[in-house]
Image 1: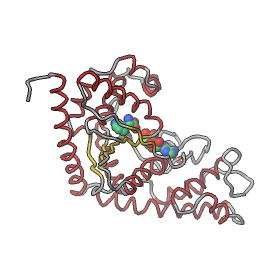
Image 2: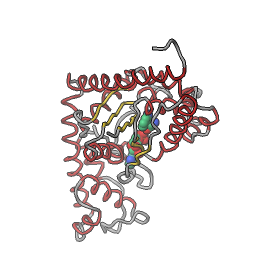
Image 3: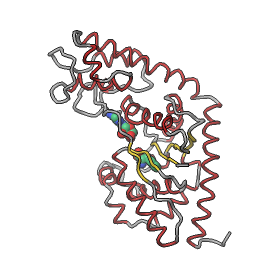
Image 4: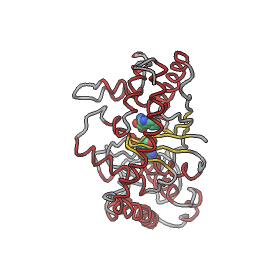
Amino acid sequence: MKRLISGIQPSGVVTLGNYIGAIKQFVKLQNELSEADILVFIADLHAITVPQVKEKLRKNIKELAALYIACGLDPSKVHLFIQSEVHEHNQLAYIMECTAHIGELERMTQYKDKKVKQVLGVKSSLLTYPALMAADILLYDADLVPIGDDQKQHLELTRDLAIRFNNTYGDTFIVPDGYFTKNGSRIMSLTNPTKKMSKSDENPKSYILLLDDINTAKNKIKSAVTDSDGIIKYDKKNKPGISNLLSIYASLTAYSVKDLEIKYKDSNYATFKKDLADVIEETLLPIQRKFNEIINSKELDEILDDGKNYAKKLASRKISKVYNKIGLGRKI
Ligand code: AMP
Ligand code: TRP
């Protein structure tokens, strides 16, 4: 049986871009790979490589877990847990720091990008972050790791570390492969459609949050930037606004972009936007309903407890094996 693992950072509010580009893809994977053992965790230890506020972090962790369930992650198919609750992640991360070389870590482009943005000094964990990520994966003997393109380099390093450890201490880790989800389209800002939709944009009209008030979300669609020629046609270069709205519409319904072009051939932007606003409502309403139902429920805690117990069982076995291979402590 193949095992898949993936982590998601609890880095704040979740946008429609995150939903289409990441969450929806994950739910699809869960349904397509019904035979696989799938673990998904909230990577809270990764989040503290940059400054966080305690109360916000707590809230984000729980909200992200609840949102994943609300968006269709099925706890009977996926083990969902919180990274920091399985201490073996830290234990193996240290071993991975003893396996990786500083030069390798310094070459990571994400480190180089994030480093320059730090105002209060660069935390050493920002550099060692890929050792923790390698530990997250190798701890569970995962075969496949669903990730976006931006994590490709970290996965390559994970493979190198697994191979290096195996060569030094004998076969211990499975060398994992990336599973590159064909990202649903890249969703662009509603106010500046040549820029990615991002929660860090200072204009809240540029993004839709999964937990936005429904009318607010609908109005954001209605006021989205388009152009003046009035033709509903996909042309990313010359008509980025309407093309983005077509992508969103197609991602959330069974229509393809082509179908939509035909459907709205003799229509106008106002009608198209009104229909898309209704699609947004149909998408967000059930997610928010489910979210509100479980965010403070015992059910959510039980799901996270079950996930933690399952992960712990696998992780504790693995870490004992690794310590023995290295010669740490006394033989057990
Ligand atoms: P972030 O919130 O930027 O850390 O991204 C988390 C996940 O959501 C990543 O897998 C991204 O690829 C995906 N994502 C973020 N923003 C967008 C967007 N505007 N369009 C599509 N996918 C996105
Ligand atoms: N680093 C990933 C990100 O920022 C999250 C992550 C942490 C992860 N550990 C992982 C993804 C292990 C896959 C497997 O998106």
